Image 1 (spheres, helix red, strand yellow):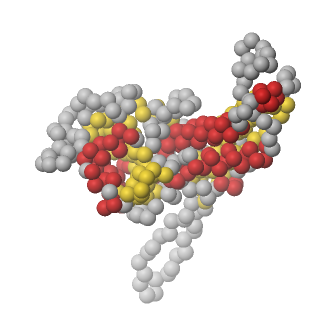
Image 2: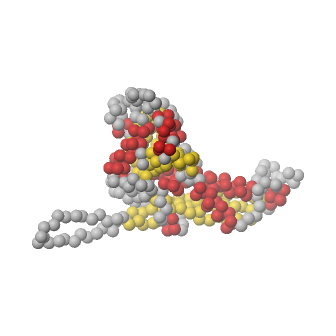
Image 3: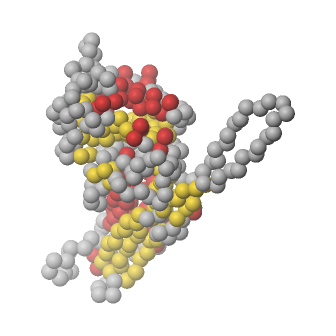
Length: 357
């Protein structure tokens, strides 16, 4: 560019544009790029307006059934109006500057580029944070995989017996969940996984196969009477590779293959689950691809399965605005994404810690 710029100035060009049009572009792109939008319900989408808002959710009352004999007095039960809360406490933003001179001299439309990138970053952050939350983990920093156990309850717990992560201990698969893994001190350690390769008659010693883990997840949901319709499973690329190694049929029509990835959807039906692949799941240490020792709890990944009704998200892009930079000839564009998330049915969520054996 022939026009001179101050030392260190490198802002990219864009044009003046309507803030209303820009907001619609960001919102549409955001919904197309997130896996979380496919596996959570948005029943409370329209019930938030500002950060800090709380949505009270009424629980279905429990009804007692008693034996009856003719002449017995019938006692009417008092119903409890128990509730729990979804707190809207997550907000992320972006802001960038559009220089008037660079806009006039440029033949490239940076408005679309910046808009798409902003939408991707919002979607990526939202996906990482919510997937971590419903798996029982939290991010230690923005734009990173969840890598620490979550100990902060959002609002009030949906089930009083759930832990501080709002999940049920009985719905967490660990090494000692599988009887064939007999090494000592299994405890809360991650499950060592190995694919049962075609033609093999047995698994390597003290390991479970990926298909075994998925089948156990399905069984746990069955035992909680979770509806079969609407079940989903989110796995990371390492787990997906192990599944494919174990059985090539995983990707053919016999297993309901969908014809390609859509929002991370890899397979329409495997053990009753819609299977999604995402690199935004929790990853601890060097991740699940690191071969573990006999009792591995330093480097592992987490996969999660559940039902569409298990987790609610209430989200919106609350504001996108353009204003003049008072210190230069440029527009500043900024936007904010506001959302909350809540585990509604912890009995409809099951996770598994694992590492490649």
